[in-house]
Each structure stands twice: as structure tokens, then as C-alpha cells.
Amino acid sequence: MEAVQERHENAILWRIAQLAVWLLGVSILGALIFAPKIGVHAFWNILIPVAPALLVIAPGIWRNVCPMASTALLIRHMGWAKKKHLSTAWNDRLAFAGFLLLIAIIPLRHVVMDTNGPATAIAITVLALIAFAVSYVFEWKSAWCSGLCPVHPVERLYGSRALLSTSNAHCQSCEHCVLLCPDSTPSLNPLTGARSKIRRLTGSLMAGGFAGFVYGWFQVPDYAGWAGWSHLGLAYAYPLGGFAMSLVLFLALTSRLSKSHKELVVRVFACAAVSCYYWFRIPALFGFGVFPGDGMLVDLSNVVPSYFTILSQILTTTFFVWILLLRPAQPHPWAHRPQIARPSRIRFAE
Ligand code: SF4
Image (tube, rainbow, N blue to C red; front, side, top):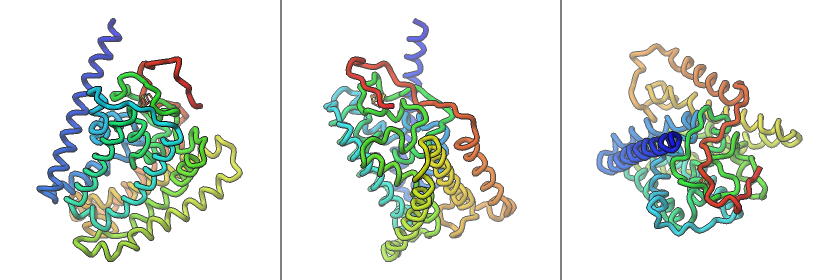
């Protein structure tokens, strides 16, 4: 009885957290349109820089409170969704499309979104509408949160050694909406349970290429106004060039390795990607960026000593090396699987 009461209270607290983060998301969306300077700072220079670290430490928290997920799943919570079962083949295809979306969208930040609030608002609104539509048709997280969402490939890459597990605050009961539940599978990485060709391709591209992609992305400045469109080729060339080099190295390293060694290489590349992100991003946030003013939250360059840059880089890289590579393995899922609705229908993937 006490356990039931505790679960109930826990669920209420998560609903409050979801509502608070959703309202924050809606406020940022409004600011992007009506007060673009504030909106751009709030979205690109506060919310987004926190996300990668959260995906490493506790992806379950992110998936529980992500405003896009709450928007997508609202109709399912209301009981009005169609709850169709999505086949594994289609889930794999959607995951590949989500990866392509990720790679297509990120370079557009330099071209237009980093400096243009309404453009960012349009991109978020379009994604939210797609998320809502596919989640109206298909059961729980199968089509969006574990399928087409462009953040999901990053969750899989960064979240393989999560420090914390949470309860699953969306799925009221498990309907086995996907064969391999990302929330409930311990030590999930982009290649875990990749049975189909397209899933293996998605996993290999993400695991191998993303570190170089992140590095390449930071070699391009932000463009304001229409100038970005004349640098569209450059905005894609650097990240995609980095992606190709990193992928070649990854494939060369993993081509002859056993499964467990391959997992280690995947974590090394995940660690390189997230460390590279903060290597450039934290200095840029505080006025020490490679391109002065780009992605800057507050200029502290005249306030703190210049060794702030190297200090932040050493601390963040050490932190991610510890979490992803050095810490003894503790296979947590991102979230605990809720009660299974129809156990007889369940097939678990390994
Ligand atoms: S817990 Fe069950 S219903 Fe929820 S996402 Fe995982 S497989 Fe789908």
C-alpha cells in the first residue's frame, strides 16, 4: 500500500515537473518570436548547452520532461491517440530519418537559427507538429521519442553510462511500443540490438561520425541576416568533412573487434563528441570563443583570467572521460520499465 502511495506521489511530482518545463519551453518559443534576443539566449545559450551533459548523466530525466515529448504525448495521456503498433522495420526507418534530420538541421544554426529567433521558432514549431501528428497515430514513444526525434540519436550515443535511472514518467503502462525500449534497456548505445541493415547503418554513422561532425561544426562562424545563405556550402562542408574523417577512423578501429571492444570504441567516440562540444562551447558562452561574440551568453573576458578556457576544457573532458570510460560499469536503464500491460505479447530484444 505504501509503495502504491509512493508511486502515486512520484507520478504527481513528475507531472508538475513536466508542466513547469513545458511552460518554460512555451515561454522560450514566445520569446523567440516576440523578443528574439532573449529567446535566442534562452534557447541556444542556456537550454541547449545544458542538454548534452544531462543526456550523459541522466537521459531519463530529459526524456521525462522534454517539452517536445510532453507535447507529442499529451494526446496519448488524454486517451485520444489511435495507439497503432509501429513495426520494428518502420521504427528503424524513422530512426534513420531522425539521424538525417539531426545532421541536416545542426549546420543551419550557423546559417540562420543561431542569430534569428523567429527562424528557430519556426523550426521548433514544425518539429512539434510532426511529433504531435505521429504520436497521435502510433503507440507511446515508438514514432517520435524513440523514432523520428532528431535528439534521439544523441541520447543513444551519450547515454550508455547514465549515472541515474528514474521512473518512466510518460508510459503509464508498458505497451511494448518498440522491440528494444531505449528507456528500459541498460547500457544502450547506437549499435545495441541493431538487427536490421538500416539500424546498423544509423548506429555506425552516429557512433563513428558525430565526434568529427561536432568538431567541424565549431570551425564555422555564425552568420547574421542573409549572409548565412551565401555560406551554406561552408556551413555543411566543415561538419560533414569532420564527420567523414571521424567515421573512417571509427570503421578502421572497429572492423575487426569483438562486440565488447566495439562498445568501448563507441564510448570513446561518444566521449570525444561530448567533450569536444564543451571544449568549444563553454569558452564561447563566457566570451572566450574562437569567433568572438558567437554563442556568447555573458562576456567575462575582462573579468576572469584567460586560463579559464583551458581550465574549463580540462575539467569537462576529465568529467566525461570518467563517466563514459573510467567509471566501473553499472548497467542502468535510463528509466525503469513500468508495469507491462499484456505480458503474453511481450518479446524482449537482447
Ligand atoms: S516503456 Fe514500454 S511503452 Fe514505454 S517506451 Fe518503452 S516499450 Fe514503449
